[in-house]
Length: 135
Image 1: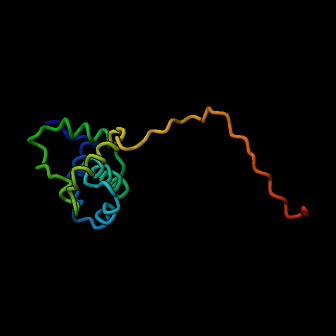
Image 2: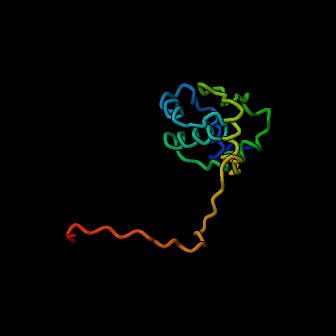
């Protein structure tokens, strides 16, 4: 087994950090509206950990985690179950999925980003008098 690189040590420390007992993190995660999504929660953990322990490349971490042999990975816990009130209803989860994947919503009318090409209307009303104008 080769010695762990500095990045691998940081990734392992991040993986083993006890976010459940960190009160500051738990207070902050309550403000995330769609925290039932494991990806959003993971990004929130990365942001918080980077602020208190030190920044690291999140994409490199994800790649490291994907390449890590399954027998070395700790038992996976559904991160959504750690958040009070989760999981949410299927329709709400569908909304979150569409937002994360930048998919259109069926019930929302798409308005084109262009000006109206019709000629403007002509005003027929008489202009009101100014305060200094007399009858």
